[in-house]
Image 1 (cartoon, rainbow, N blue to C red):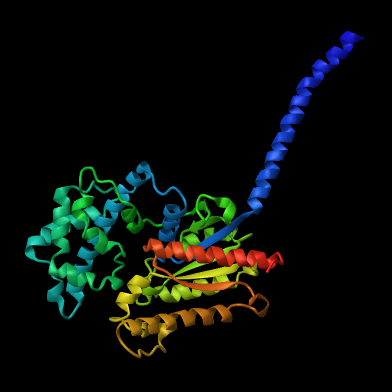
Image 2 (cartoon, rainbow, N blue to C red):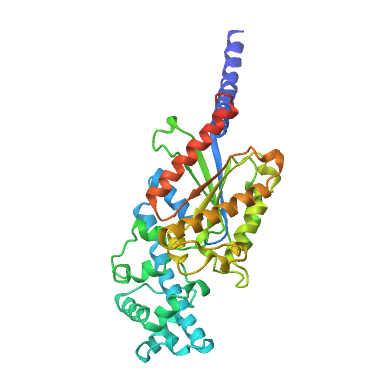
Length: 384
């Protein structure tokens, strides 16, 4: 009998271990489920080139460990690609303007840079770009400083010239160094189109996550062909952060040169606001690229955009910039309330003036977003 009992216990041991493992797995799943409930889901939306990805990179720099050396190195080819793509756009644009404009002579590239321009344009059209050498950088710099290219650059809004153009062209010697390692600023300026979905988890209060909310931010491609990938992310969202590039009121889409970028932003914002799954979702509107808007509005009237056709300038200088900004802000406010059904008017809606490249401003803005969302959570819990 004793041997039978001991044998029974021997057979029970693996079963007990198995039950213990199963219980441990269940406990971990329960812990992870509880942890997930405390993570606030943020969705970063906007059109292509609205500055979403720059905001995303700033979050990584501000509230995570930033970019390690290996990740910085991975941006070398992207930065070099941006240089080649930019000089090709400018070269080809100058040729087009020289053929079609009344004052065509000012767009004709000098004979000293003509052959160089053709060769650089050919390189810029390749699928794989060579490493940027000192020799190539000198040639690009010479072409960049050509009066015809500078005239063309002044009309960059018509040619899809990227915002990073001036920054990279003014840093060619550093970018072409044999031991070049991109800086954090280079990474922020670097332009690569977002495809699919990328995510990051962070807390605006820094390392001590116990003293504030934890957020999971999702960034998605803004181009039209990428927007269908957004839908599956719409459920369970705490807040939508919508980026609108307010400097692009006189520009057209990369995908459709007949469509004004601001009109596309307006239509997309309106569509997002009306989605049923955002009935109780907070909306944070980032009126982005204010630095570029500030420079442009003095030279290009707001009313070139159909949505802003009723705009009337009242002054000049900084006063006019503020007047123009307030006008644009009011347009978005009106659109929000026009597109929001009466049963949704109590959801949180905030507008922030942003410049994605300005780290201090982005940090301040996210602290304000965090404060707003924490207050909303306290209100819903009946603690306010």
